[in-house]
Each structure stands twice: as structure tokens, then as C-alpha cells.
Amino acid sequence: MVTKGELISSSSNSVSSANAAQQIGPLTIRTANKWKLELFLFFGFLIAGLAFKPMVPCAIGWCGVVVFRTIFNLAMRRSWNQNGLSTTLSSDGVESHLGANPPGKNLVPWSQLRLLGLHREVWRMPMESKESRTIVFNFSDIPDMAINLNALSSSEQEHLFRIITRNVPQRVLAPEVLYMQIQSLSGEAPTTDGYTQRWSDEFDRRFELANHVSLEAGRNIGNGRYTVELTIATRMSSSTYLVSDGKGQRFVAKELVVPFGADENVHEKLLQQFNREAGLLASLSHPLIVSVRDHFVEDGRSYVVMDCVQGANLRQYVRSFERVEKTILLSIALQLLEVLSYLHTRIPAVIHRDLTPDNIMYASESDEIRVIDFGAANIYSSEGTGTLIGKRGYMPPEQFKGKASPESDVYAFGSTLLFLLTGEDPPGMCRVPEFAEPTGIDENLMTIVRSCLQFEPTDRPAVGDLIAQFESL
Image 1: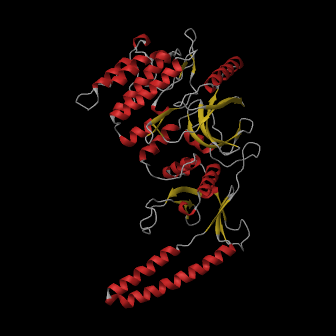
Image 2 (image 1 turned 120 degrees about the horizontal axis):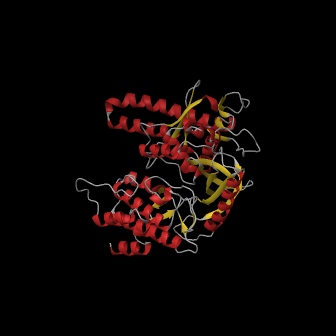
Image 3 (image 1 turned 90 degrees about the vertical axis):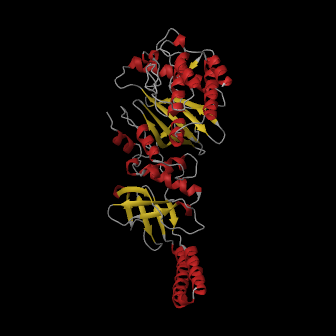
């Protein structure tokens, strides 16, 4: 059994073999001078001296000091550009050096890094961004080293976070830095906007105890077609990765691991079922469903590669806003029902089996959802039995027996609707919480929730009937 700490560490350690992982080149960052700060102070003291006559001698003195420092720093800046005063990050560590120094003289290995955090700026220039974007490397034996992301281009920022991902264990990253890392590697500008402690809790929830070791960053999969950039989440028998192809396009790869101890016949049967079902998922085409681009089996592990969807899932959205407005909730519900209608009317029907707030992305700007993570979906067969897949609280009783049906997705829809109404995960097993006092929750919506969470699948409403009910609301 692999613990969470071991799992996270193993997914981000430096690459040990050139055959197993793709190396990434070093990044050199030139040192920038705050010459704008010097000019700002110069004019500030000059104006103060002109406005307050008793301060004239002091202002003249300070102006002289500022002018000298400005001229000196500008001159040194030209010298630094020539001599190459810079900081270099590579797979070996971090090094600050002048051009005259031989490489490796001031190299600090990654093993000495204790924490990679975010610098809290107390004072800024008026024209500078109010957001703190300076990350600080806290080493055990040397003073802290800081890198201002505002001084880097978007490509340099992405390069920086790629190096961090390949060489720095996630356990030494402050939550805010990890948040920025995922943003950068997902193609977004790294920012702390919208970050809360709840996101840190969300990260802890993503990584569970597992019976497998997730792939390290830089590992090539799919016969070299994709490179693992980051481990997004890890469950008992699966991991989800952010990957990129040879053109730099980003995707999400869901990895399914055969249960430990399964014999060869079971292993072969599961692989055949995976190939059949993954092929079906690749044929799905709906604007509200994330597209499956590829699927393959490699080294005894099965992979489904999907489009990378930016934004927050419904769990993150609800935790940020606490209460979902009724108009937004109705829009989300109707879009979900549209997806279920598309899946269940296919021949044969496709059931998602893992419809939860974590697997539904929501873009508030466009008021549009995208249903993701179809790794658990399968073809419906009324006579067959399947595996136990799903999340407690969102699984109907029949799914605990491995007998999921289209009505099982209706139950999961009702549980998701209950989460949007209350902000809490449902208790599960067809139970609906009772409220002792008025909470402002729409009773019509609660009536729909209760109908979806019926014990018997045949007692739950059809998707078409649910669409009609929501349209009337």
C-alpha cells in the first residue's frame, strides 16, 4: 500500500532514467533592477522638498543619494547584461552566478529545498500589480532566493513550473504555489486570484491512499505520444494526469490500474472490456461532453486521453460562492439532463456511473458546463453485472451491487442537485436530509431531488420528464 505522502512525492521526483522520462532544459533568468523604484523615490523627495521648505536640506540630501543609486544601478545593469548575472534552474538545482564564474560553482541541489512559497509584498509601486507573484525558494543552508513572475514571459513562467514539477516534490510546495503551477501547466496565467484555503482542502481530498504508484512528471506514455506534466488526482486504482503531445497541446489522461492480485484471465477480460468501452467513448460527440481523443493499454495500465477543460468544477464553484443562485442552478440542471438524454438514447445506452460535482466543469462567464471523466462509463446491458465504480453519496443501491443502469445516472443527478442546493455532500443510500428551520431552499427542487433518490430504479423519473419539470420552473 502506498501512502499519500509517498504517492505525491513519487509523482514529482526528478527523472532517473532517460528512457523512462523526458528531460527538460534549464531556464536562465536575468536579474532585473528596480530602476523605476529609484526614479519614483527621486521625484517623491523632490516634490516633498518643494512643498515643505523645512525639509529642503533633507530632500536635497535624499535626492542626491537616489540619483547616485540610480546612476550606479543603471550602470551595473549594463554590466550585468554583459557579464550575465543570472539565476539558472535545471534538473540539478538552482544556481546564481556571474558570467565569469564556471557553471556549477554556486549550484544548490534540489535536495536542500525545504519550502517553495509565495512572497507577501507589504509595499508596491503604484503602477505595479496588487497581486503578489514572487515565489521564494527556502533552502536549508543558504538565504532565500526569490523569483518575480511579473518579470518573466508566459513561456518562461511555464518553463519555470515545468522544471519545478519535474524536480520538486509536491509536498514542499505551498498550496498557493501548487495552485499557480496547475494553472500555468494548464495554459492559464498563474495567479492567486480566487485562491482560498478551501482549495488546499480540495487538493488533500484529491489524493487518496492507492494500491499503485502514479507516473512521475516527464514520463512518456502512449508509445511516446504524450508526456506526463503533472499528477492531478489519485484514487485507489486510478490516477489522472495533465499530459502534452509533441505539439505542446494539453490533454487529461485518466489511468485505470487493474486491481492488485487479479489473475491473468481477469486481467485479459478487463483489458478487452476497456478497449470496447473506450472505443465507444471516443465516438461520443456532444458540445457539453469533453471529447475523448485517444485510448490505449501500456505496461498493464489502461489510459483514456481527453481534452483539457479549464475552469472550476461544481464543487469548487459552490465552495467559492457558498450558495448557487436559482437561475444558475436551473441552467446547470437542464444542461446535465441534456447530456444524460444524449447518453441514454444512444444504442446501446451509455451510463456515466460517476456523475458528481467533481466531474462537472462550469464556466460562469459563458454559463456552460462540460461533463468530464468518462473513465467509469460503460455500455448498458440489462443482463450483465459490472464493477463497483462511483463515489459514496452519489451511488444508488443497485450500483453498490455492480448493476448500474440509466436510472443510476438519474440518482446521481439528484444527488448532485442536492449538493448544489445545500453545499454539502448527500448522505447517500436514498436519504434526504431534513431541515429543522426554513433555509430558503426551493421546495419544488427538493421534491425533484426526492423523486430522483428513490430506492427502486423504476420509481425514479425519466430524463425526459425531468427536463419538462425544469423547463416549467
